Structures are given as C-alpha cells and as structure tokens.
Image (cartoon, rainbow, N blue to C red):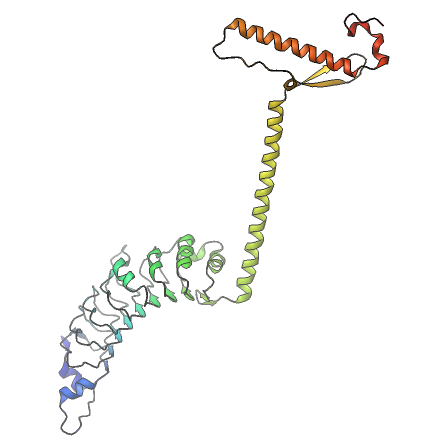
Length: 348
C-alpha cells in the first residue's frame, strides 16, 4: 500500500529549502504535485499544501476521494483510471475548474453542487456492470448549468442525453460510443444548447439514421463541428435553401388541397340545396332542368299524422306540376302554339 503523504511529497518534489526555511513552509508554496502511476491507493492529509492548484493522481489505485478539503486553491484535479465509485468530498474546492474522473467505477454524476467555477468535466469510460449506464443527478446538473462548458461522457452506455438541456453554457459535448438512438432527442437538445459549437457522437446508432447530419445542422446555428467534421457555411446554406424550398412546396400543396376541398364542398352543398330533375317539353327537342328548390317547401313535422303528411306531399307534387307547366309556357314560341294539348282550353 502506498499513501500520498506530506513526507512522500517532500521527498519526491525536489524541494529546495532556503536558509532557515522549514519543510512545512516549503510545502505551503507548492502549486503542482504529480504522483501519477505510483500505485497510490489513498490520500492522506494535505492541509499544509494550501497553495496547491494542480494535482495529478491518475493511473493509481485510489478508491475514495478524501483529505482534499483544505486544498481550497485547487483548480485542476486528475483522478482518471483509479478505483473510485463515488464523487464525494469535493464541495469545498470552490476554485476547481477541471475535473478528470474517466476510467473509474462511477455510476452517477453527483456531489458537485457548489462548484461554481467548474468548466470541464471528464467522466468517460466508466467501468460499469454489464447493462448499466451512467446517470446524472439533476441537482448536480442544475448546479453546473452556468459554469460547465466542456463535458465528456463517452463510452458509458448512455441512451438519453435530454437531461443535459439545463447546461446552458455548454459549448463542447463529447459522447462517442454510447447508445443514442433518436435524432429527435438530439434536435431537442440542440434547440436548448444555444452555445454548443462542437459535438462528437461517433459510434452511436443514431449516426446511421437517414439525414442525421443534415437535420442536426439545420437545427443548430451555433454548431461548427459535428463528429469531428467541420460544418462549412456552404453546406449549411445549401441545407437551409433546400429546407425552405421543401417547406414552400408543402404550403402550396396544403393551399391547393384546401381549395379543392372547398370546391367539392360547394358542389356538394349546391346539389343538396337544389334538387334537379329533367323535364321534357314536346317540340322543343331538349330536356329542361327544373330546380325543386324553387318550389315552396312544406317541412313535415315529426309529430304530424300520416294524413297531414300525405296532404303536404300532394301539395308539393301539384306545385311541381304547375311550376313545370309555367316553365313550358314561358319557353314556348308562337310557332309552338299549334300543339293545343300543351295548353288548357286555349283556342288557336
């Protein structure tokens, strides 16, 4: 077992003591400590290193984040490729800007509330049980909403990243080799992250979807790099023109469809309101059309007796006959008056 102690730091930091200067006084001035790949499995009390700003402890065997409470000036912490299961005991590091935790056993991104200066979070390739995925504590995400600008969550079996929509200042998202499947989820996220200019999703099933790249470029005006490939102005402008043309065609098609429906509705209403029957007048050669709507109608009351209904029907039929006869008289010419059977009691 190897523990990171003040004595170990003093012996391996090539400290140059000034005249009458103690080791404790010298430790207070240290700003960078590098003990990567030293088989370290625990962190001892580092309270004397009050000016420590950068701590390299990657590629070790550390299982717990402890004894960093007094390193209040720490800005960079490198703990990737250790045996850490929980993100804890970091809330006192108010100046922390970059946190590297990739290659550990972390299942939930949590415990980062209060780190208002954290700009980069790297939690890629967690060694999770088969079938499990990396999760995000909403409290931590909301706490990082204003500060976080770079997030690396690659290779964590993640299938949904819509919860990241609260990270309003995020400008780089690296999420390669996950299980993202739906383009709509990405479109939703890009609509929220207005400052995102770089996104890498290589190795996700969604990358194989039709028009995947085109759709994301059209949604985000800020995106400059997608999956490692630059988005050029010519490409974006072409897609915008194509979409505008497609939308215009849809609108035109809808208008045409509405006009056609209105025309069909008018014809249908016309036929319903005007019952048309052909009436043939002898000697005229062509059938004439008579509109039943021109006849005074007598609506039948639902409570009326069969006799009254019969009388009403008889009146309608008589009016139809009279109307047809009037139509024929008005259409007859003087040359047609030799047909006496068409007129009642008319002498020629």
